[in-house]
Length: 292
Image 1 (cartoon, rainbow, N blue to C red):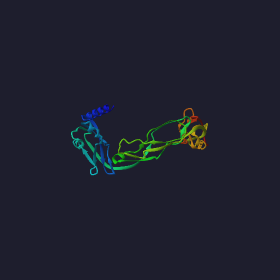
Image 2 (tube, rainbow, N blue to C red):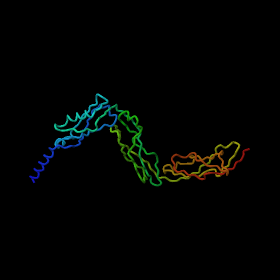
Image 3 (cartoon, helix red, strand yellow):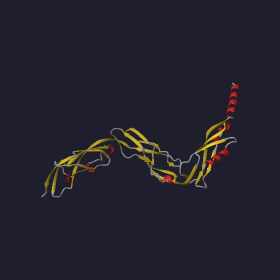
Image 4 (tube, rainbow, N blue to C red):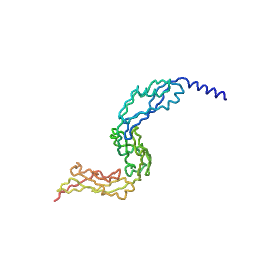
């Protein structure tokens, strides 16, 4: 066993002494003022093709290029500059073959902070005979975005990660992560939000609503039959008791008489918290009497 270990070590040392071609990542360490940030995406690494012994390649991951942007807001680094900087860091006998990207264009600008509303990305399927009591509520409703002024000033809202629910039959509350910015220089605070969906069971309610006649001359007395409609509404249980006919308005227009002595009924007003309002009849007959 000892002989095998010694043989393996000897073989490994020999192999690591040979030259190899390899691609390595060299970390970029940027230094810039606290009140400045990059105007656009910048790479975190340079990729370099290197020919070196196995021993030297083992330590290539420790290489780091420092870039100081305290004195200038815009700097460009050519391939020759990058290659020369890296070559000085390499052990003797190591050959630098290629550097990617072949040029760095860096520009910084002041950090801009802005508060924007959140927009919930959601697909919610409610159980039968249930409804959302109100629009989904977000806590907080706004987030703070910081980043390059030229980028942040164009952002008008920020979306949450998708919320997908099926068969929802009761109120629901949970945390959602916000979408991650594609631009790594943009910071979002906070990075998650609480969402509240208020759900309740619904039922039907029938109401009798009197008809109002519009554009009727003073010289005419109009008798409509029937003189009211029956409306069927879908309403949440919490609103059932307060729903009444005064929150609706049904009209007929005397100027839009039909050839069969009927008038079409329009529902011009309805309570804003009800759904699926249906009413009967759709038209009424009328008799015209002249006033004395």
